[in-house]
Length: 215
Image 1 (cartoon, rainbow, N blue to C red):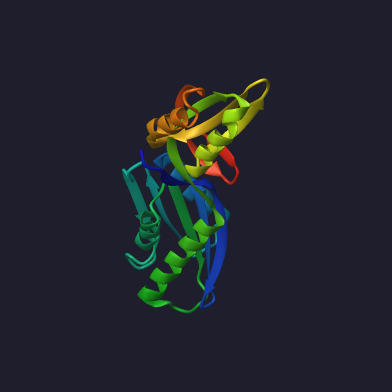
Image 2 (tube, one colour):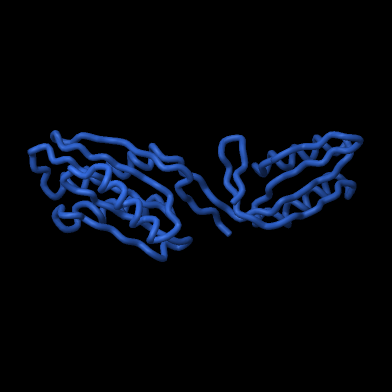
């Protein structure tokens, strides 16, 4: 299964357009209830603002999408915000852009640009990761085969979670599901069948810098 992007950690930022303040807040959500609660939370936090425009998308295939202009001219806020989420192909995420009107009208084009820019900046302030399906793999080898296995894993950008060194070496790796068969063949051939491969459970994971996060 191909990986998909989600918001791992929310973010917030602010831009100013012709004295109007646009505060964008992004948060991961798993349901419509969570998204609605998040929107309500921002409305309460910025209770004196002019507008609280919002957009969210739920599901592996964007099964549920909603957006709201919250009083701005129709089509100038919520839909442009949702378009950013869909264009970036980000799943299970909600964004609220709060506007404090600065006294100068932006026009429909100006509003669309401001709300899209706010959403983009909010996503930039958040932590976006790629979730993918993977399988745990323990590779047992003698020290002679270690270098070859490390090379094969690095070549395929497969994350090593831990390595145990005793009289033998056991490498604990997280293998993307689509690379499972090819990697098994490469390791077996590369070590002339001396490496022991023990496959574990299938799970979703994401790479966070040098770390692997399991879900």
